[in-house]
Amino acid sequence: MLKKENATLATDIPIKPKIKHSKKKINLAAIWTISPVTIWLLLFLFIPLFFILVVSVMSRGTYGGIEYTFTLENYARFFEPLYLRIIVVSIAMAAATTLICVVFGYPFAYIIAQSPAKYRTLLLLLVIVPFWTNSLIRTYAWIVLLRTEGVINTILLKIGLIAEPLTLLYNSGATLIGFVYTLFPFAVLPLYASIEKLDRTFLEASSDLGGRPWQTFLNVTLPLTFPGVVAASLLVFIPTLGLFFISDLMGGAKTMIIGNLIKNQFLTARDWPFGSAASIILMVLTLMMILFYLKVSGGKTDDTELL
Amino acid sequence: MSRLTRLPSVAYAVFIYSFLYVPIAILVAYSFNDSKLNAVWKGFTFAWYAKLWTNTSILEAAKISLTVGFFSTVISTMLGTLVAVGMYRYRFRGKGMIDAMLYVPLVMSEIVMGIALLAFFSMIKVPLGMGTLLIAHITFSIPFVVVVINARLKGFDQSIEEASKDLGANEWQTFRLITFPLLGPAIAASAMLAFTISIDDVIVSFFVAGPDSTTLPLQIFSMVRHGVTPEINALSTLMLIVTLTFVVFAQKLQTRKR
Image 1 (cartoon, each protein chain N blue to C red):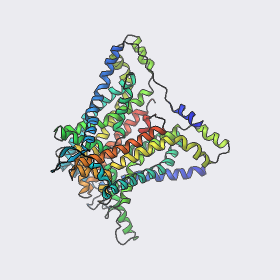
Image 2 (image 1 turned 120 degrees about the vertical axis):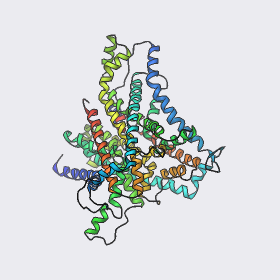
Image 3 (image 1 turned 60 degrees about the vertical axis):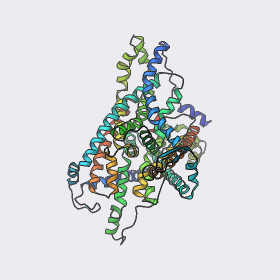
Image 4 (image 1 turned 180 degrees about the vertical axis):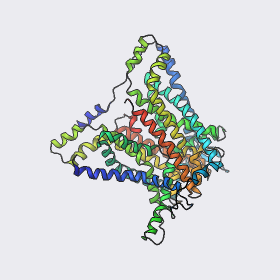
């Protein structure tokens, strides 16, 4: 019952343009406005993606080119222990990043949504600014802190807590910090959007009916904001798999994620078919997550949740 | 909320905001540090900023970033606004598919877009450079423009447009005199965000930039790989200021009259 109510609340007023002009004229205007972007995206996004799909089932030429003979070898290689490990590590890192961002982001988003209206805009802006800030610069900020001659080591040495500088960088922990730091705002914004929409009367009803705060949270708040949780997970999980520069700069060679594999296959190993296959796997993972999101959100995407 | 429950909330919020901002604050602080060794504070200086002006590869990268950012903003804002208005106004077969198409770049992994474009440009034998960079930036900027314009269109009073048409204005006049002025703030906001994501992009640019078209983020990437210097801090600080300015303005434009 509650779910149904919320679904109708969340629905935006349907837009039904009442256009009284002749059909021919409208079609012409529609073509003029919509076709440029459609053609642009077909040409520079969907054809390139289709090309990658084709290359992923081709063989590698002797000198690193593409030989146009069909093979599934590139996909089969992911069952080799070396590559299987990269996939498992990537998914584990992305899952850990997602979990940390959502678990810490949810109460934070809740606090912002509950804050007095006069501060809310500012508090939200303070999350939006890092969302748009260059992720490389944000990664670099942590390198400044964590490296051997970095800020943290210098302070610890000065106050005599340690005698030797600690190795804080170039491990999977550092990479995880980099991922979380970069993607945290991506979790908070959709969480905030769904918590803010929450109808407070449901919470009051729950407590009036004798629900304890944690019962209200588990049975009312969480189910109603679940689409936000899934959107947050989606916006953290997918980018994590591709952030090769963070694992490059903070993880050293030890933490390889799918993004590093793709980058290396295209730029260093020059095995484009294998790199393409890795990209297709990444695409499939992404699609699966999006379909899941569409299922829990009832097929309605809200623009504001993405920004 | 009672005082007892508010205190932990405030403490938690302070903790999270510190996590978000302290590393950035330290990065900025050390851009003024009078020492090549980043971690020890030796005194205040503008030397690293001055040094940026003599670094020709940084100046060249800045030129490329600004040029690509400018043209990518203009073109993606135009195309994005056009398609958003069209999608809002017209119904036709296959509309759902185009709608889905517009969202693909927002959710897909950036690295896949980068290598797909790299493979595509190499297949059609287009050399990597400013042109390929510009095409890539326009492609990933369009959906952001569409989202911002859409948000504005949702709160749009359609009867104004209808009134204009009833009074005898044609489609183009209605757009120019009614729709466009009403969309103005949203268009400006989307342009600012498009510029921000263009000059900040790392992943896609990494794959489609040629050897002679290194952007500022790519320049920072290669500098960080060779070691940490206060010069990077100075450059990062300047870029942070640009992002901050544009994002705050964009937010102001978007929240006004909502």
